[in-house]
Length: 122
Image 1: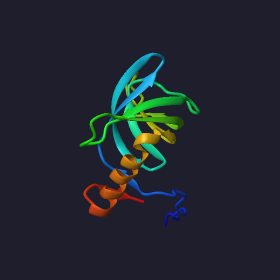
Image 2: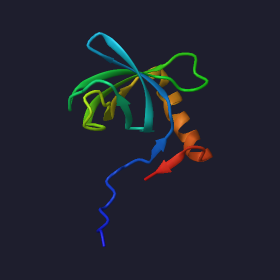
Image 3: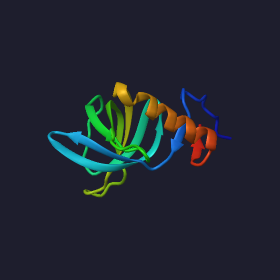
Image 4: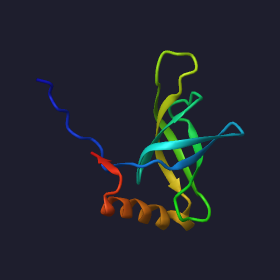
């Protein structure tokens, strides 16, 4: 029987697809979140990002007029398959959320949790 490891996550991951524009080396890449929490997000991207790399991202939340600027750091990345053009799965720790929209970001996540619309994974 496989031993279950203790859960290390501090927050629930919400499996909700949100548009994110990742800014890297004066280029922008549109991605969709696989999951998100108050302290991190996960997405697939077609370029390799390095662990500990700083990122600026625009997060688009439904019903907001403009995206939320988020600064993060890559905490892990892995290629999805052995194919040369396979995308990378990336985990980003959120370092800073733009102050003027921080409440909008947290309220959106709380509303999702309380409404239980997306799948919640612990």
